[in-house]
Length: 230
Image (cartoon, rainbow, N blue to C red):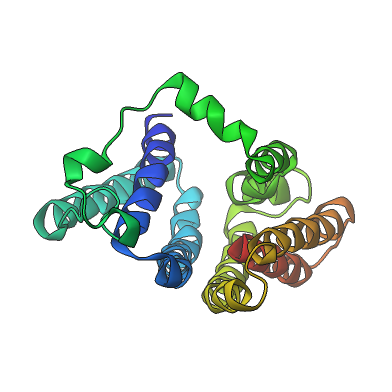
């Protein structure tokens, strides 16, 4: 629970750092590289951690490994991270001091975002989207509902990660292209396409009882790709 809370709290901070570090033209590619590398590493670590499930105390060893990775990353961040400053990449804010760019977050300010129709629709789509459930409960689903052992079920993380990485990298360039040729609707249409394609892949991959783990690997790769688009 603590680990999940830390990860959930850290993601908005990460997105904010990317926004502060890269201007609008480079931001999509930077986001693609970041999430692509992150998922690629996690997709290969996952099957390795599953090997611990053969031991009664394996989960303890796995948690120690995860804790060690978190501790190492914390040390590297403390040693090498340089704060760019709030809004540092925004040309329109270049003449302002950092304390002038910073605004206190208020309930009224957050609620004002819902006056933007696109934002409200995106928030609603997030509530209706189950794409994060696959990465959290996908292996458990294959074990409890389809009868695979932990080690075999965890193999789908590799094609999931590969699909995610490839689509994430390509999406960074695709969104940059759409910004140029379809500036006001391109990003929204791209996001909608990702949601619909994920739903199709998830429906076929989870609601039909396939017997071969390789088939599930194909559907997990497709779901990873659509998450990469997202």
